[in-house]
Amino acid sequence: MCLIMTICAAAVFTVLYAVNKKGGKGKKSLLNATFMFWAAAIMWSVDGIASVYGGEPFFDISREDTILGFIVVGAGLVVYSMMAALERRRNLKA
Image (cartoon, helix red, strand yellow):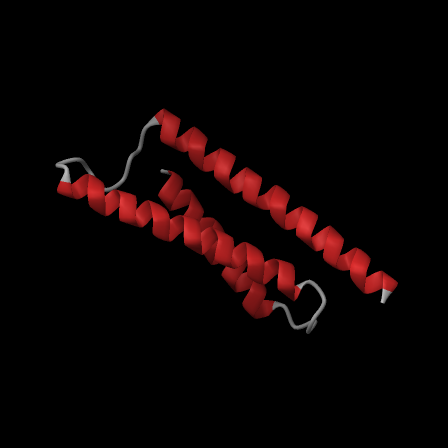
């Protein structure tokens, strides 16, 4: 479930990055968050492939994996918020 949630977050941030027409303002933090979520999605995809080779299903739809997905997406949103605030602060000083 964390793979599904991470892919959804990565897709949302990718669309936000593509739609953002402001130029430099806010684009760097969106790009960083996009890469962060896609990297996590790739990591869990490799883990899912290893699970299939081990005879388990590709997607883990357990309660613990769902909680892990919420934690990862929440932590990613917190990191994105902090990066965006720092970026906004730097742009105001410049």
